[in-house]
Image 1 (spheres, rainbow, N blue to C red):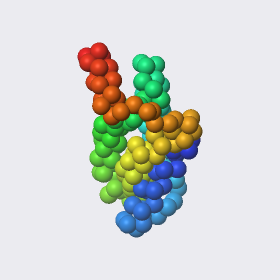
Image 2 (image 1 turned 90 degrees about the vertical axis):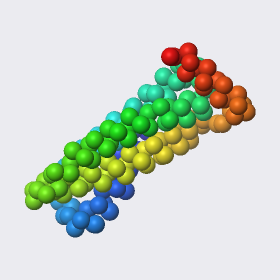
Image 3 (image 1 turned 30 degrees about the vertical axis):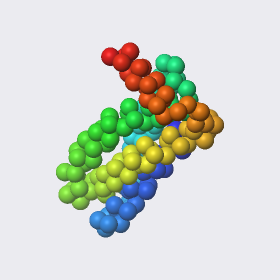
Image 4 (image 1 turned 45 degrees about the vertical axis):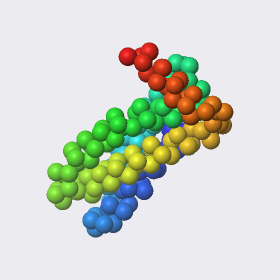
Length: 149
C-alpha cells in the first residue's frame, strides 16, 4: 500500500514543470525519486497512527478518520517546510528542474495522500462505517482525548 502512494507526486510535479517550462531531464527524475520517499514517509506516518489508534481501542473506521485528523497538521507543515526550502534552488540553471519537481510534487502529493490514503486503507482492509450515532462517536473521541491529556 505504501508503494501505491509514490506516484501521487506526479499529479503536482508534471503541471509545475510544464507551467514553468522546465525540462524533464535527469535532475527532475532525481527529484521524483526523492519525492517518492517523502510521500511514502507521510504514508507510513499515517498508517502508524491508524495502528496506534486501533491499539488504543478505537474501531477501524474511527481509527482511520482520527489518524487523518491527528496527522494532517504535522504532515502539511513538514511539506510546507520542504516546499519553502526548495524555492531558492528554482533560480539555479542546473538544479532548477529538480526543485520545481519537488515543490509541485510535495504540495500536490501531500494533499492527495491526506485524501487518497484513508480511502485506500478503507478499501484495502474493508473498513466499514460503524452504526454508532455521531453524538456517541464524539463522546467516545472526547473521552479518549481527555484520558490522554
